[in-house]
Image (cartoon, rainbow, N blue to C red; front, side, top):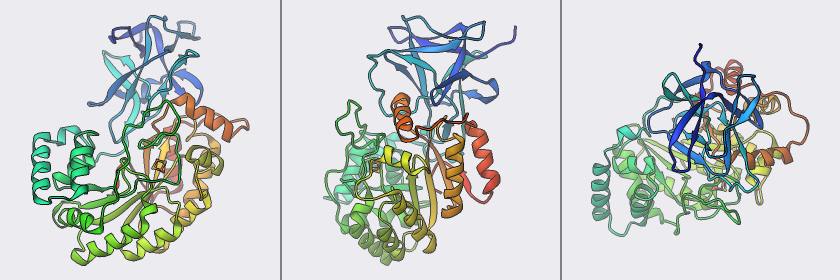
Length: 417
Ligand code: SF4
């Protein structure tokens, strides 16, 4: 008999097994479909498997109809390491009382040919976040050394003692290993309230995995930490706009002064900004001060869905478009952080809107990053923002091939380049 991918479930003690009588299913938007073996890859090392409380796994029985696993078992999903894009989400049926899921990507996972497999692929071969590349004993040694070397520098302490030690942030660890991209967090506030914000969740039962930085660093603290990195690190980059902060453009004056002060000391390396792009005038000023690259995040190129997810305060999608324009005019390298969700990002209406946005904004790169959110919560948002009847999704790989065909010069990846 031909082998087919089987569903994976977990019992009440957390033991994960396959149930070979049901063929594995994936989810796109709200649709459930059989997983295609051609889209599977072995579960990447350092992925994590999650048990989904109050949710039963769905699969296909021998008659080809959808069936749920027994109620003694819960559904399981995979969280993929950085650099991988999920092509289908876990298929499950949630009880009415199922708790909201925390902020992860819930990629489908199945058992196939004697191994866990996922419908996913690696979009960026850069190893800068691969766990195997981190000697954590060395990182901790370096944190102690930096704290002794820069006494009283709150930013060094924050990135070492909080970001590395509590959050396991690879960019922060790379700061202390003095290589590649290093973080510079500056902002405790934001002018959006994204449903999937990892640094603040207001009035929801969803925990934010990180807290926003509790102080605003001085220019001197930023310069003291950033300059040695830019001077010495291979492929040196410092990045404003991190998971442990709000929106850096709200600290535009500080960043502008810091960039000017840094550039008085070194011209080496790239100064980068991860942002929601809400303040085009500040983007213009930062570019004039010496910002080299910018990454603007979007969950959608459709203004209604963007607004429903970002819940912007005091800015609109048009401001974001102006930020692209100002960065482009100033010669800054532009990436889009495109928060990808199977069944929504590859909706033909989204594809057309994103294509128009690419034509208008001419970015250099698209970073395809999984949107980390409870799939049912996001679909409720999508249904509210885009109530008209939807066409069948194209599939994430077809979508990417389409955009690549239309815009062959745009680089595809995951990490800041
Ligand atoms: S723009 Fe960034 S910091 Fe602000 S709410 Fe959204 S994810 Fe959080």
